Image (cartoon, helix red, strand yellow):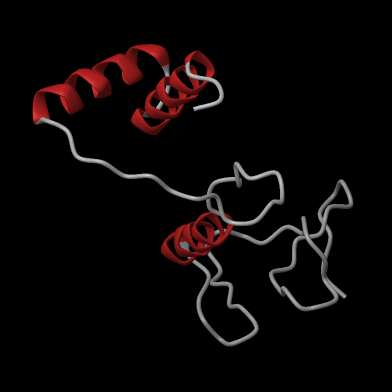
Length: 111
């Protein structure tokens, strides 16, 4: 059982499988994960990065599987213009390319 302050908040620093989330852990006391690795800012940043890499971007395919990709080469000047337009519009270059191809396919039905 952990000690409590005057307001009844937990003041202990033991993090165990039964302590639950949201418990108070003093920042001056080291915290370790279940494998004995110290949990510090670098550890947290790596963990968040791992989650982001695992999640990736959402699929554009209706089936939810991996979306097919299309890649092509273009002059550096066109890439730079696309990057600038994308930045101004809050989009990615891939968003611009996808929109352009979608417009082209609408303009050329049945081809």
